[in-house]
Amino acid sequence: MKYRIVSDSSSNLLTFPGDIDYKTVPLKILVDGVEYVDEIGLDTAELVAKIKTSQTATSTSCPNTFEWLNAFEGADAIFAITISSQLSGSYSAACAARDDYMASHPEAKVYVIDSLSTGGEMILLIEKLAELMKEERSFEEIKQIIEDYHSRIHLLFGLLSLRNLAKNGRVSPTIAKIAGLLGIHFLGRASDKGTIEEVGIYRGQKKLVKGTVAQMIKEGYQGGEVWISHCLNPEIGVSLKEAIQKEFPNANVNINQCTGLCSYYAEEGGMILGYETI
Image (tube, rainbow, N blue to C red; front, side, top):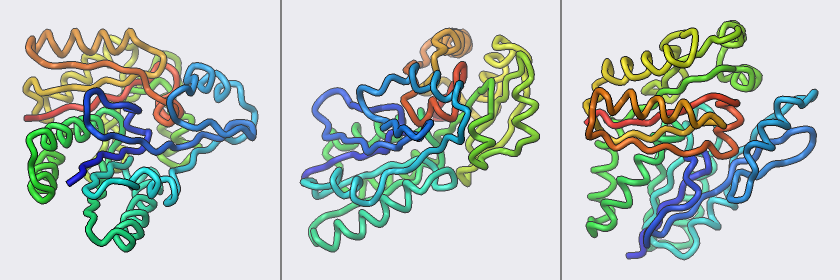
């Protein structure tokens, strides 16, 4: 059985090391009439700069069914992971592609996972799938294990601006105005339903870091793996890693840069953090 993992680009993981069959399908960002495709080679710093100076409406779009189908082609056991269905149509498109693919490939198995999240939580799911595939688990075993694992991973995000989230109806304009005040950081979480929930408001990055670690511990963090994706702010990644490892010295904390879609919503200075509570 030929396994494959397919993720949309909101995972911030466009390639996977080793011999795991892994593909991504891109989301797109429209700025001043120019479509930026969230794929390898996209200059996220340039994209963020264009968004900040744009005087017109900006928007995003999800991968279509045809793009998901292309990513499935050639495999017969596929696990597809999408950004939260509450934030994008990517999940619906992946499900439509699953139905089409299985109709034309009766022997194939396709399982679509609504991450109810984005960024680091999706990376944790991808890594767990890869681990189970290397162990040569059956498709049904992997499906059962990943469903249980999914219930024990979480996502927090710290943002200096909620402008793009508010413009696209993801948070209320009132909360966005508060986050837009000088030096104010918004800490939020992905709820169990895949929506955005407020956790707290902090003045300054140091207080945000402290509040983030406190929230992780409150939700059951005990030193599991962590993925921190930042938008043009490597300092917050390092600060969070140091703060987490101060409490849990053996914690495996990874840092990477947001790709296009997450950079659009996190905006400059923001971070997205996925972690295990096991």
